[in-house]
Image 1 (cartoon, rainbow, N blue to C red):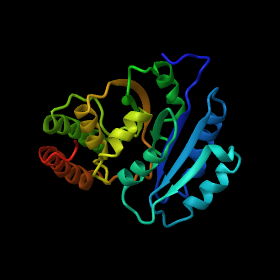
Image 2: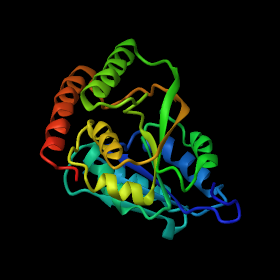
Image 3: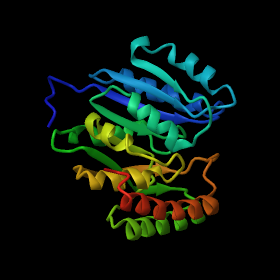
Image 4: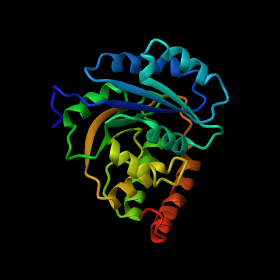
Length: 243
């Protein structure tokens, strides 16, 4: 385990796209949590080419946080959540790098479940949504179906692919995200597939998740698109893309 007298440097990466209306309810809680930690905590905002005032609002909110502990990585155009997250994760400098969705569906305080497990023997900490609150039936139904399909196509045995709350040791993050090729919602499956190919050591951590209105996920369209992407991942593996 990480020794208490030598706390790790932690990065929190938050991908955002047109979050002007919601970021004000979410980011102050992350800042307060980070400020209360015994270790240095870097906050990295990965903006996916937002067309609204997301960057302006975010910059104003972060002004109260130490200037050397936050940065905004801005993509020149909208690539997709996976593309923004890839840039943010590769830019982060922490010993451990967490990414979290900006809707707050998994609260930043769930990181309390992760940190006692930090160890040199674990590369990747995966949140598993064991407790869900008020999730629409359609989203739950297709979500479970996607997990089964992804495990079948990719030959994995993961309990959860798409929870937006995962923490990597820095070296593991560099290895995985440097190999990522998908910019859309399929990046999670691709990254976990790559992590298995690299024989990274993983642990699943139960977390609480709640549905937040305003999600940009369009269930039917995204399920079809991500199903096709699973085949793309397999094809790219056969072509040696992830070596």
